[in-house]
Length: 370
Image 1 (cartoon, rainbow, N blue to C red):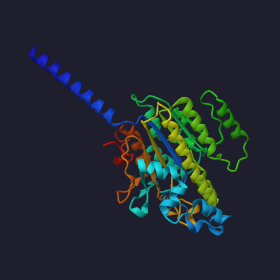
Image 2 (cartoon, rainbow, N blue to C red):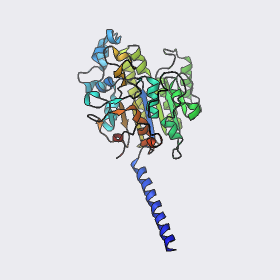
Image 3 (cartoon, helix red, strand yellow):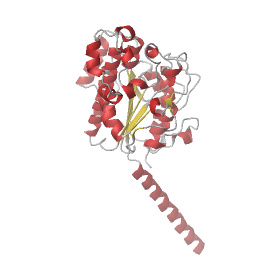
Image 4 (tube, one colour):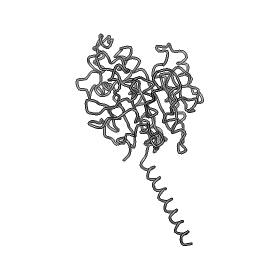
């Protein structure tokens, strides 16, 4: 009987310790919601140094009014230039969170898939590893499970997940037929939730707006669609991919590329201010921001990316939220990889993605609670 009594006491002690450990983990991880925004092919050079003077002309950037462009985005100091281009990133995210990828300051971030174009980059980011089967931009269902699908299937995970994209292939990255995730991209109308007047208008714009690109509308449409979904459904995770930064760069139009970058920054600010105004999100939301790949150097190769342009492997990433120490722009640190973002996203929610997917990149510990 004494042995049985001691065994019961031991079991009770173990249960108490286990509950204490769970409580400790919960207390350490304040993040309950994730907003993850990606913008296609935005170079690290503009992110960290602002507009580049060698492209701000007719020859290299198809600029019609150089004086007007320089008035808007040119400043003598790179810190002032980058803030003029991306004020939210540099006055809020960098000051209250962390930004990686300034190669001029010993902070490398890079793609590991070796291809340096979109579908492989999105898949690597969202799955945590490069897959040689993902070697084109064809609109085919992703054979890999993204971290968002993995989280959705966790017993401890509760809440909706919504993914929105400008580029129509973004939906394929999430393989919604298998994953059952809400994934809306390209010109497809968004019908996954009950229609609102704003959603009806956005769907009409998709149907009626002249198409500059066959595979995606302007960024404003997926952004406002995602914002409407956020306000209506209050998802646990909201993912948004924007595309104009890549499209205008491929066309060699530097004014439009810079303006698209500036709008992306404004969309980040709008999302952040929206969630801070909502009691469900205030104080428990982390914002992640990154591209799918980089681009070549100025003044000529900035328009392109891919295997023939090795510099397009370099990217950047930014994190802001209640669990991220405010260490600002990072310098002289170990290189980071795109493949680490998936596990980092899961870790913010207290989940160990690498334990289940060992080939995924490890979480970025610098941005997680300590």
